[in-house]
Length: 419
Picture 1 (spheres, rainbow, N blue to C red):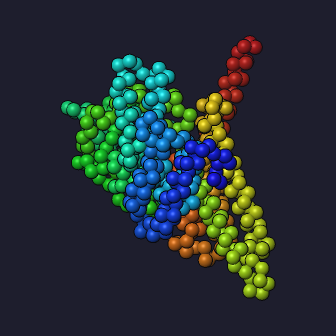
Picture 2: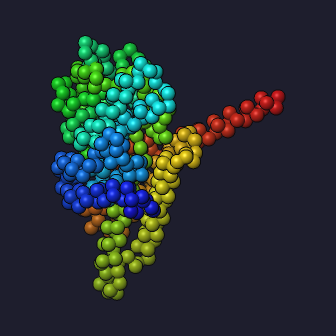
Picture 3: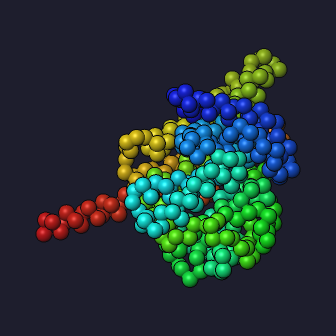
């Protein structure tokens, strides 16, 4: 495994399940991209392999994998079909809605009368995933706020027996594919994170629609258009609406509440590795007519491969370090330090991956521009990573603010003490 330098026997067994589905994913990558259609047959393949429960604990019927397994899986799938890898990643982020509530209960963050409701919802998330249910994780919206990366305007209004959801969710993978849309909404009348709640929305529920097909630069086979919600009724037992649950769950996470975001960068790293390999095969397998030497031996190609190799290794170093920080036991750094590192790592990884894809394109020339090919597809696929969630510049700005604010606070504390 190129991403993980060492694996346990259990991790190796889970990796073999992933490896078994890669040929089918690779075979469908080009036609799925050309048609702009998620290959729905992959759902059955992943379900039959048990991979829809990859990061669900064994006690709930899953494979018991961790972030290491998820990153390794999305990386490997990214080398075959980045679109499927991305959709698979977002399915697995749903597990955070089950794992984090249970951790928060153990940490004593919920009151005794709240625990049964929270635990029931959390276990429902995990057992459904382990049972082969595909969950699409819908949090993002088109509405923007200067104060937050993600703003939630979708509302949930209490009615007899449950809730009515109204709003629009953008850019969520597996639209029209997932069995349920795990949807984040704001309880009507609230305006803080304490009012955020989570709902199981059946794909075919009355009032659920799809936004127009999203024709954009980036992965084309993720069913990423998003959904509309108009008076969608959700029974009370299909929701987690305990006030403040969202905030309390965040307190026990080691990363973002979206769930294991590092694994999304692994998708792009896999795509970059695939582009690198394709460029290497094309330029070493083709020779100059006059000298008989491989095209890769030219000075220009040597420079390009030197740059690409450095950028690829840079991405590996960043992602491996972040993976270590988020999975080490006991933790190597505080939660704030891990978060700060991720704000830098995400941009550094994705920019390096994009540089590799562009270098591969330069290496192969016009023959590499065919949309059905690995390299052109990688350029388009990885381009989305430059803006997804947040661009590198925003992450570095936030990291700088965390560093300088901390130093500033320490300085004033020291000054006050000296005074």
